[in-house]
Amino acid sequence: MATALPTHTLSEHQVRLLSHIAAGSQTRTIAADPKLGLENAEVDTAVASLLTATGTRTVLQLVAWGAAHSIVTDTAEPCAALATAIRLPPRLHRVLVGWVGGRITPELAADFGVTPATMRGYGRDLRAWLGVRSQVQASIAAVLAGMVLLSDIDPSWPTEPFRRTTLPRGQAA
Image (cartoon, rainbow, N blue to C red; front, side, top):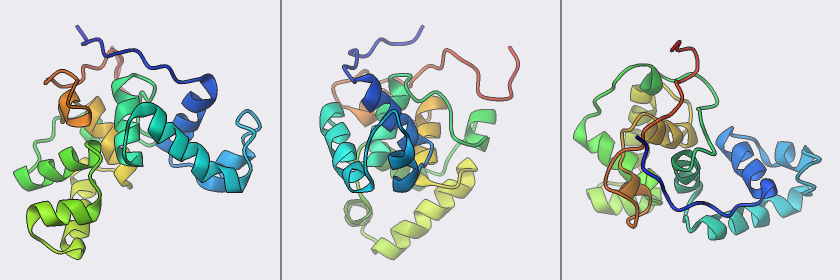
């Protein structure tokens, strides 16, 4: 049984914006959505407002939050992490936990005692292991595949992985 998290209070507009972010939509695509009614110049402000509304620090933490709340239910493209159990090397798992926890590259680099360039290399390696093209998709896959704990996203949440109630794309019941 899936753990119940505090219910979110996002508006339909905010949920739609979160869905665009999770899909990797660019500013002009988000602004072109008539249901959002945003101009290009307003998109960054709307995203910042969404971060505040969810209590998240970064877009990577935001999409992980959205996956944990079952707002984001799949990655934009099929990914290896949702199709098979992947056991990451400890260092790459720590990077993933950092991403879903709202840490940015300079902070993670300092945590690891490496340069930002080395940390970006870890990010490339992690995306390759997960079979995704972006950090956003890696964060979503991490939650949906149960690779991170809910408490990694928000320390007030349970110390257990997310449990999917639907199968990943392309898998039969």
